[in-house]
Image (cartoon, rainbow, N blue to C red; front, side, top):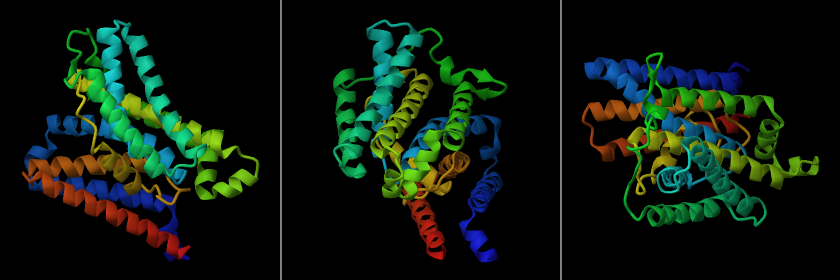
Length: 317
């Protein structure tokens, strides 16, 4: 019974992830004093903000048993559209931001429709969206950055210091709180777990799984757009070539935090911890001057390990 608890308890897995995070911080703090400086801590927080918001969004999709490979390019698409709305169409900043969220939700809606209504595998549907948005980013931007430096106060969205931390981090925490509430306290959250646990049973019980799946992908797209806004504010520009590779870190964060790629399991708290693990690991290795290619190797090994642990837990059940 104790063995079963250790491997299958969601709370235990969250505690293990948090313990791993603390150990990483301690190890890097010992290895290099530069790691524990105030400026580096802020760098970690701000880097986690973007990846964390993306990871929070993908958590909903992974719990349904799906996947989204278009995370990074949709985020960049939303950054580009945000810059275009504000600098070329001269919309007020608030209107531009609102339209940007609509763009992200629309991308998610298209993904959800292709998967739910046209029965395309999530891998194929989102791979197509990845290429579509990757191309649109270059077409709309004219293959060059769209700068937002002239937009008064735009950089404050991510970089304004609030209670000693960047505002982008505050946005991340607010997004995580909202996502946690939706996942644990609303009908959408309950149906997300129901679809991931057994979609056919959910459908036979009267749940319109196609409709709810479309809604889940749309919600995740909205979160991706918020990450795009934070990224654009952080850089004071929309970089059309940015994006590919972010899906790896976001999915890794969710999986490390306890989300099962088989569906039916996951939590926002675990995803937040997973996002910090990825950022702390990347930041620490960079400070130690570990080559980027080896950083990618380490991240890949961690993802494989996390997935294997999930498979091992399921075998015990």
